[in-house]
Image 1: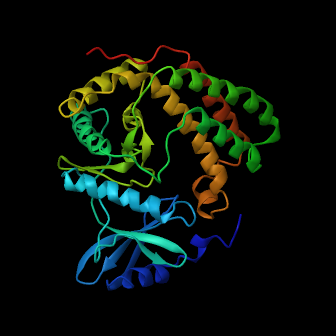
Image 2: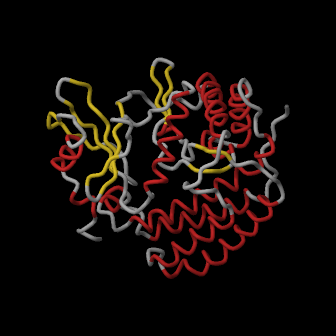
Length: 327
């Protein structure tokens, strides 16, 4: 584990110096928030509400890619869609404090919505449709595109080259992931689907709900892909439960936009991509001192055994008939 990772030097004093460099006066209250890919802090401001400061991981995104993230959020705010967009100062929303690009956000409170609640799911469906409507207006030029089989191949290369997977799992892993690639190639090439600008990582942790006010937060993984990418992560439970949840989401979604029925066949493809990319992400980030603390089980036989089991389950899921909704 490296002790010279850039984030190791991001002290509270440096956080306050960065924020004061754009015109605020900090009151010395700096609280780290739950974030691993970037570093996010709640920072007290003299005679004002606290701000949320996000320090982007160096060398992950280009300035152009981050500006596309911000521009997407500003488009959504313009259409009165409840996202927490960055604060602009003299027309700028992205700032620099060597070696970090950073942005400031207003603080918003709330809790993750209850996805077992039909009211919450229908509300999410309505806002998702409006988000996707804005996302369809133009394409990203500098953000990732969901590629399908190529995403799996890249993830597998990262895992195998990292040295974190025990050698005794290599053979079985190398027998499974090419089959998953073949399945994805077959399923994703057999149907055409339109790609739009998406949130990209819309799990419940990136949703805040308070007094029926929903906020969508953390667009750090926004990308170009099928609308279903922002829908499937809201599903849970057995197959019949997922169909029931989809029906409720669909009811809200179709108030503003046609539901993407043809993309239901992509649900397990997208889930497989996420499973493999998550393991690759942990391999890539293991030199960050925060990761061994947050994910102590990662460098163990148990993790890789469970990962292989999950890939086998995905292999079976990809062979099943896709979820079906009747219009």
